[in-house]
Image (cartoon, rainbow over all chains, first blue to last red; front, side, top):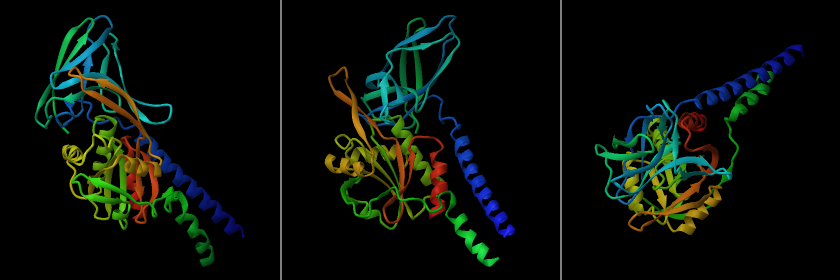
Length: 150
Length: 191
C-alpha cells in the first residue's frame, strides 16, 4: 500500500511538472520579437492597401513630431496603430501625430505603429521600391525609399 | 504491479491536452462559399477527413491580417506541406474580397497546394463566422483625395484547428509570433 501511495504521488508530480514545462515553453516563446523590423513595404494590388515598415531616429537635440505622411503610390497615406478593442477584437486607428524624443528611435513595425498606404494607384510587386515622405515639425521633410518584399 | 501500471496509464495519456476537448462541433453545419478560383465550396463538408487549420483575414488589412496569413503559411511550410492538413483563410470582407482579389493576395504570400481562401455571399460568410464565434464590425471610414470611400474592420484575431470530424479542438490568437510552434505541437499530438 505504501508503494502504491508513492507511485500515485510520483505520477501527480510528474504530470504537474510536465504541464508547467509546457506553460513555461509557451511563455518564453511569447518573448520572441516580431520579425522583419527592417525597411520594407508589403506587396499589394492596385486599388488595395499596403503597409510600410521602417525605423527612424530623431537625431535632433529636441523632441520632434511627425505631422503627416505621404506616398506617391497611395490615394491616402496615414500613420496607423494596431490595437485591441475593449471587446477583445483587433483593429487599427489613425495616429494623427507621433512625438519622437531627442535621440529616440521609433519602429514602424508589424502589429504596432505602421504607415498605411491605401487606395494604391498601382500594383506593388516584389523588387519594386516605394517612396514615403514624412513631414516632421522640426526636421522637415524626410524621405524613405523602401523595397517591396513579402 | 501490472494492475498498478494499467491504473496509472490513463492518467498519463489524458493529461496535458493529448485528448483535447471539443470547443465547437461543426459536423452538422454546412455553408456554401466560394474559393479563390470561384469554385463552390461547402464548408466544412468538403474538408471532412482532413485536419483543418483556419484563420480569418481581410485583404485591406495589411498589418494584423498579414501576420495571421503569414502564420498559416509558416505552419504549412514548417510541417512540410502535410497531405492530411488543409489550410483555410476566410475573409471578414466578402464585399471587397472577391475570389480574384483573394487569389492575388494569396499569390503575394506564396501560397500553393492545400491552401484555400474563402469568400461568398455576405450573409453566408457571417453565419459561418457566427458559428465559431468570430466577430467583426466596420470600425471607421475615410475618403481618399479623389473621393473614394474606404472602410476598415475590427475583428477577432483567431486561428483554429478542426479535427477530421470537423470539430474545433484548438483555438489561438492568430497573429502572435509564437502561434505556429504551438499549433504544430498540438497538431502533432492529435494526428
